[in-house]
Amino acid sequence: MKFEDGVIGKLERFLQARFGIGKMYSRAIATCVFSVCLHNVHVMDKMGPVHPAVFAIDIGASGLGVKTPPLRVARKIVEEFNLDYLKTGKFTPQGLREWIAPDITIPNKDGTMKKPHKTFLLLRDEASTLFGEQADYMKDLYEDLSEIWDGFLQGYSTRGFGDEGNTEVYGSLLAAGSPKILAGLDPMFFVQGLGNRVLWVFEDAVFKPFPPDFFFGSAQDSELETLIQETVSHMRELENACESATIWKPDAWLIWANTLRESFTKPGDDAMKEYQSKAILNTLRLAANYAASRFSVTNSGDVAVSEADLAMAIDDMKVFVQMWQKVVTESKRQRAGDFGRIKQRKVDIRAVLSVGVRLGMFTKSQLKEELDTTDNVAVRETINTLLEDGRLACLTEVDDEGKVTKGRVPAEVWKEFRKGHEPAVYEVQEKGKAWLEANLF
Image (cartoon, rainbow, N blue to C red):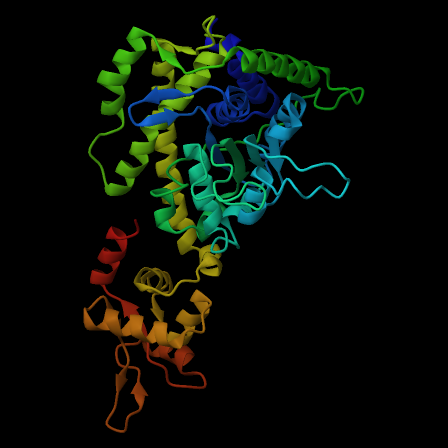
């Protein structure tokens, strides 16, 4: 069977035609949804198993109807396939752990017994609470999600399961959010832990006029219902058929040995190398999904990955790497903007220089306001460090009577700074700008 006629291919085409979304967003949604049925499948090598679970996050503009409606279709498919496999809505780190492995001795409010969830899709159609205001609090969640991508929760302990806990899990993640959520993320997020495990989708969104048949004559969406039923039927069939490890046909294995590593280990900066290291594993995951979605399954339950499956996965992964780079660039822009100012909390050299570059000339009070901090000691010590090595300069001067004078501050600017007091005024120097550019990651 050709890929376009398989489960992922059909769902991808439907999403593109129905919602006008890009190819990679539609493919990411279809692959994440489909991956849920492959929880018995893994690629085994000498470093351990690689599961075909997939993490994907779409970054797109708000208000165009291109993020939430497609995810609603994804939710309906997984609900119909197996409601126990779906986790939506907000959750804290502890809440997620309790859902995965609850205390099975305590019943639910309705009297039913709690049960663990070892296979699941985490679906969030608004990722702001994952990566926005609560970013500091949610760092434990980032670590847990990274472990889930790896297939286990390390050091897990619950009242119900004891110290060993429910360590082996199979989970995919599908989420979407606007570029604003990137403002609250530390640069290291994209190169270590969760950020470099994610397939980032960042396509240009174009609003398309609604077609004449946009509204239905009745409440029944027969086209969607047919798609859901067919997709669920195929996923159930494959869930039962795929019972063991993925095998690689000879040509596909040669691509892995001779081409794949070369594709994602090219010279680059450290940030790129970190993402490329996970790109290799993500390529294997995509290839397993693509093969299974076109029913390339042996009688013994193995998913047989062909040369074409792996070649498509490599091509797609190259696009995901490019979009990861776009997300990284956009994150820099968002952190430098007004929304980034709101999100910034940490007082360190990078934060002070970032604010300083954006403001031009600034006072200590302005810096504290921009960083939303009352930590006078941290602000003073950071400024002093930057003054000592020349990355920052104080433009004002102190006269013989100990009064602060405008020094090199333009007269019209000094008037504004002087209102009510006579502050020291600082400016980031070329040395500081060069350091900031080199140390954003």
